[in-house]
Image 1 (spheres, one colour):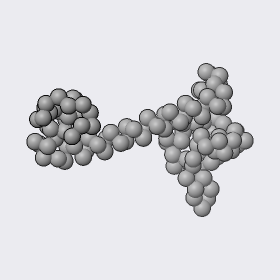
Image 2: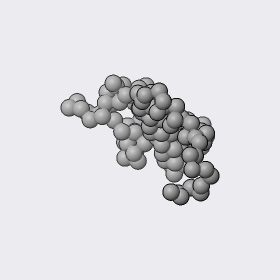
Image 3: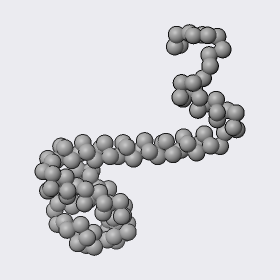
Length: 118
């Protein structure tokens, strides 16, 4: 974890910009008694924000959209990891049946029926 002064030096940012980025919700440092603390993830995110704004000239609204999409992808990857772990814990016959269903390979014992038909 990095204290605020160390973080500012590391990402080559001034305090006013950092405050604006935190206020915009682009960075969310962890609060501690000595003040905010920043993780390696915060460092990487700050460099991404700098690249978007300075190198690619993305405006603030665009930065918010990009960060939101990245956060969604990160959340989906976590959900897929949890789903995979859950599938791995199932008994083999059930796991094979579920995977076949997901691939659209499951046999319909009643024949071809429209979706939602009983």
